[in-house]
Length: 399
Image 1: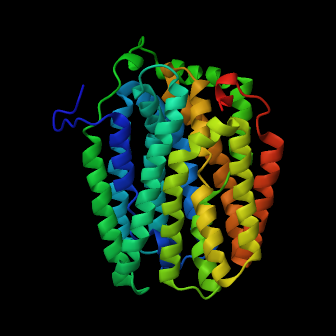
Image 2: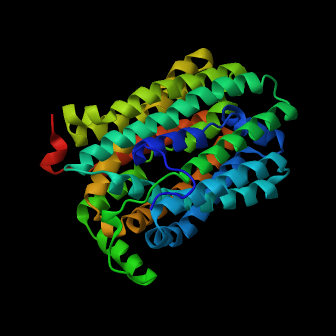
């Protein structure tokens, strides 16, 4: 059923794109790490905040995925956005490491509500044949909305945070909280997919067991290992490029423009990622996108001063390029019956790895951010070579 409060004549993909845009207008993101350092956190503590978020996601991933299959994906998305809005208002008043830790726990629960439900809601809202191909296209469309937000927010944020002083940070945080609240309100207009979601009532244990059974698929397991061990570590890049630029005498305005430029280019890259698959096949597309990410990390570790800006723009633009490609193939291997739970299990395993290795990156970055970028680049390239799936079904080799 539609929301009794709103009814908008937009399909689910367009609504999710609008929600994605509003919920990612983080006007302080381009200096977020610098703000946390202002509050007394070192880079290991900054990394630990993300690891706490990820650890919370790991613990909450399956329960929230089960809940999504029980109450509907639409309400899970709305709950996630409500928690995000609460967290942003709390962030406005946060002081000290413990406050950031508690906000991270709240954020982790919100991420867990969103992760499997968001993708399952989108996929099961598609109609017609060849849903996997449609998924690649609409995922890229939503990904472009995400990067459009991250293009506009740093530009506006660069004007808001014209000086690295507390009052400027707080204004940017407040405006971010308002934007996320609007995203939550708009999420109430989403309609739950009707036909694909109707199935015989199951207990939570049966739903969980169904998710594990669907993971018992060699193709899906191989794709999962590739996603884990060839991770492109987008959050690590985002956290560390700010102090790295400051180390290299680059201004806050340069940081904002670099982030905006990277996300503007990412709008185009995300929206058209599926075309690379159509021309070259999924395996080659994944190979190119992953090796490019590893290569850009190596270049960031080697270059200095203003040469960092164009490389960062390219790195930021392409770091999520493979996400819609992986999503389309991954969803084709999972039935809709327990899609949210299965995706939650996959995300849980990815997040567990990310939380563990994030602490290592934070420890390394406390000594040298450049060496950290170098280590990540090597790991991404090795993970790609070892774990990239060898074969894909013919449908994913369209040229």
